[in-house]
Image (cartoon, rainbow, N blue to C red; front, side, top):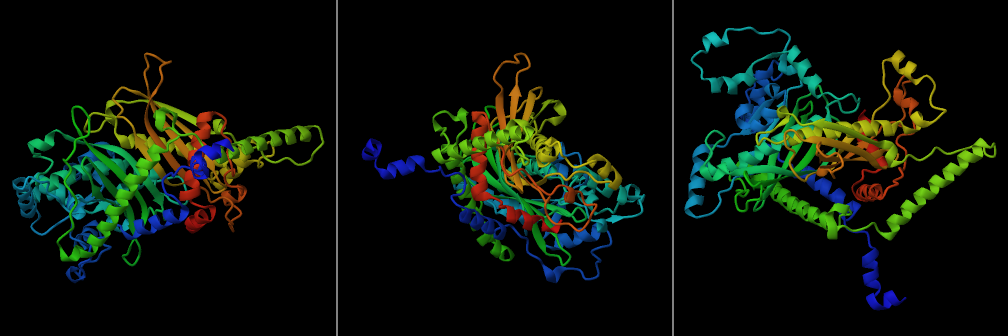
Length: 594
C-alpha cells in the first residue's frame, strides 16, 4: 500500500509490464508480414520484346535469354561481380549471376558521381542499380543429356577471357552437373529439400557483395579500380533478422536469390534477400526472406565510419515506377527494424549487458514456478506407479540441459573471407546444422526416453528405407555478430532447445571463442543465433509405411529451464513465440503441401 501511495498505480503497472520485445502485438507482426510480401522488388516484364521463336525449355541458353528480356537482366561473372560469394562458396562456378542493366548506365553513373563531388554531397543510386540476382540452376530443362565437347576454344580464340567468363553461363550443361549441384544443397527432409543452412551461408556472402557494389556503383567505379577514398572502406555484418519460410522449396526448380538494399544511413545499411521460385505459368512466388544489417568500418581500426554510404534514390525509369512505391515501403520498414533492434537492446535480459539488462517480469517468473511444480508432480506420479498406487503416469517434461549440444572447431585459413577473418557464412551454416541436430533429438524425446517406446523402430526404418522424421527448418529470428573471429581461433558452438509448443521449437546457438592456452579463461562471445523449427508429425497420413504415422505426438509442448541463464533464454523465446509465432495452426497450413 505504501508503494502504491508513493509511486502511483501507473508506475506500478509500468514496472510489472512485459517489456516490448520486437513487435508489440501479434496483429502488428501479421501486418508487417503482409507489407514484407507486398513490398518485395520485382522486375518489369518486357512482353513485346520476347522472341516467340525461342523455346524456353530447350537448354540453359534459351532460359537465360528469357530471363534477360524479363527485366533486362544480363549475366555477369561471379568472380568479378561477387568476390565474397566466389571466394567462399564451393559451388560458385555452377551458379549464375545477373545484374540489372540500365540504359547508358556507365555514363549516367559517372555523371551523377561528378555532380555529387562538385556539390560536396554523396551520390545515390536505386535498388536495381545495386541489385545482384544469384540463380541455382536446379531445373532439368537447363541441362542436356549429352556432354558437349565442341571446339569453342579453337573457333573463339579471338574472344577475350572476360567475354568467355560472361558467356560461359550460356553453355548447355549435362546431367552430371545437375546431380552435383543438387547434392551440394539438398536437405534430408521431405518438406523443403533445399538446405536452409546453405541458404544462410550464401546470403551472408551475397549481402557483402551487394554492400560493396552499392558503394562502388554510386561512385562510378568497379571492383578492379576502386577510388582512393573507397580503399579504406570495409563492410561488416552486424546481423541477420526476420527470416521466415513461407513455402516449401522445390529442388526440381531453379532457386533465385534476389539481393538488394532497402535503406541506407550514415554508417549502416539494410539489405534484403528474397528466395524466389517461378511456377508453371511464369509467376514468381516468395519462398524465404532475410534482412541483413551491414556497417561501414575502417579497414584498419574496424570502427564505424560516418557519411560514407551513398543514399538510395528512386528510379527515373518509367518501367520501374511501381518499384518506387515499394521502395518507400521498404525504407519505412527498415526504419522500423532499426527502432525495434534498439528497443530490444534496451530491454534485453542478457546478463553481459550490464545496466541495460532487465529481469523477467513477475508473471513470467510465476510461469517458471508452475513449470517446476509440474515437474515435482510428475516425479511423484512415477514413484506412485512404482509402488503400484497409480496405473497412469504422464510423460516427464524435458529439461533444457537434456537438449544442450556442443561442437568445437579450429578456424583454418580456408575458412577466411577477403578481410582475413572467419567467413560469417561458416558460422551460420555450422550453427544451423547443430541447431538441426538438437531439434531432431528433441522431436523424438518421448520415444527415445520412454521405456515403452515404439517396438523395433530401427528394423522398421531399415525395412521400408525410411528414417525417423526430423524437425523442419522454418526460419531464423536473428543472428547477431558481436565480434570477428580470427584464423587460428578455437570456437565452440552451444545449441539449446529453449522453448517449444506441440508444432514448433526454438533453438538458441551461442558461439564463443576460447583461448587454448588458458582453458579456465572466460570465453569471448562472438555470435548469438536463434532458429525456428516445426514438425509435421501428428498430421494425418494415408500411408501405413509413412514414418510420421509412428510419431504422432510432435514436439513436447513445454521444456523446463533450470539454471538462471536458461530461464532468461526461455522467457525471451516465449516472448517471441507469443508475438511472432508461428501458431500451431499456422504451421499446419505452411506444411500442408508435404
